[in-house]
Image 1 (cartoon, one colour):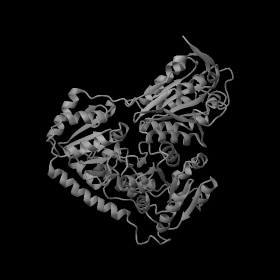
Image 2 (tube, rainbow, N blue to C red):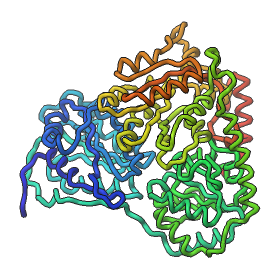
Image 3 (cartoon, rainbow, N blue to C red):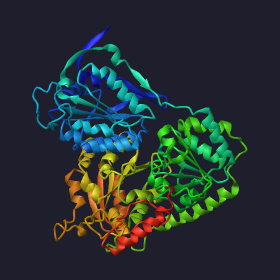
Image 4 (cartoon, one colour):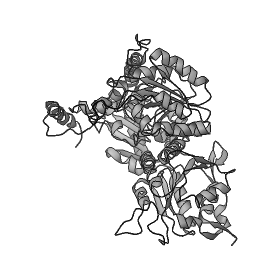
Length: 621
């Protein structure tokens, strides 16, 4: 057997370089490079290995481990899970900084390879710098925190263990059923150990999207359910994107004239003005989609986890005679909510359904006409919510999130991608943002991770550099994680960033009061640790200090002009605008289960708890 002597770290990087993926018939490297922040736990090992191949395998330097890992998540999401990035850090805080991003990748089923350094496998120098000791388990390190947020976890305690473990990690990330993050903890001494690796370990391998075929009996049951439905409705989830089934789903919807609605992850499958697109569904949904979901006798959920925002905490599908047919590549998801499961790849299974359904069958015209009529009213509501108000030139008027969305949406083009993640903006965007491109809407709402926006925007730009990436971010998320603005400037990856400054965590402040609570510790004015509260942040000045172009605008009319200046700029450009923390778009949304205290001295809480119990009666148990 032919071998080559390499360190474990060198072998790891060489194996990553040998992995390719087939995209649109073209072989491209599976890994788009590695993010790295070096420390004593990885600089001499994997750092040296990456330096050897710096001209062939790009290493990107970030300013924060969480930020770089979130960028890797966004990169994979924007690439529809067909390309991946690796992230390496030192042991200790560098590793634990990445755990939030691993949780996000796990919740959203996104492939990211985490390579945190680890303590010495020999234990000779224990306790090494940054080592957290466990009195009852010397084999444990902080990297064990990755276990619950990794689809695959291993600690490489011998160089030869890499030969079996690394391919399994890659296979886990690429399998649509198990897709998610993989973590290989790398003890710093083992990274530098040499071994005679078989040359075959570095043979080129081309990966292709796997398409699991559906069970014949499940398929027959699904066909019967569709044929007997009088009021069918399709829920489009993120799996439609990941299966590359956008055109297939659109053709299925059009052929059978079945109205469709979108989860957060499924938004963009249909253009916003498609005649059968009812828009967002669920807690942050449209009135047309939610009314249709309440009346439908068959809900065909495609590629969705059916989380509580989609199902309105299991209250949305209200027709007592309804059937929930769940088409999902993972049986774990297909069996949820007492569904009729249809386990299989979305694209292949839709094609199989088409082959077995009668060409004459279509959804009933009265049903289609009714929901289309509802949708016309909803589209009118969106126009009103996002229209430029009479106070557009008034510097004393605090615009709503909907006002700002309207201005940005009208400015955006078919080549724009909007990026967002947490707070009130995902709900407003889900309802109000209009996109005609399947790559035009990138909102992370599986983990709803504050701080994702700016790092995520960077990952989106890396994945699709030809697109105009617009990041909308609240002041809370900006302050939580903003260092990758400097990274975007350093890498020449231009972002347009609009900061909506409502002086605090306004979304949770609204929820707090809706549950009967007093405004407390969310808006800066309601933080009682300092009498005067925190000073107002000059976001434009801060962004400028990080190397970006920037400006503060005083009104909506100025925002329009500032967006034009941002577009003309050749570098990342930050626009800050003050907004009103209280209003949100109430139309269309459904109930959400947020528990209210059963005992309180506040009358408002007692009243809210009584209403909460009434609302919970809609749930099946």
